[in-house]
Image (tube, rainbow, N blue to C red):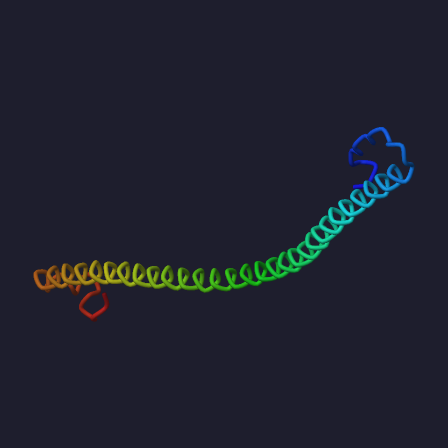
Length: 137
């Protein structure tokens, strides 16, 4: 703010002495100067604080960005661990499924062999004519 921005009160008509008018003008100028200096110093102080705070906020922002990137990397590492664990569980499920299918196939083979043995037991005389007498199945 400049001194011209502040309203200057009108100077009353000067008394008969020019010294009084001169003293009044000096007093008014000193009041305006004192008010301007106080306001200016207060504003300069606040502007300095704002600039200092801006620098601090910028530093905090940079630190936050750095830590955010570190957190993202850490999250990626944990995601890899989770994915590996899920893959392991899936593979275990696949092995279990494979084992169950193999067991069913073996049960079918066992039942088939039992039926063949039953047929052989009832048809021992015919086994020679089918090539089963030599023990080939």
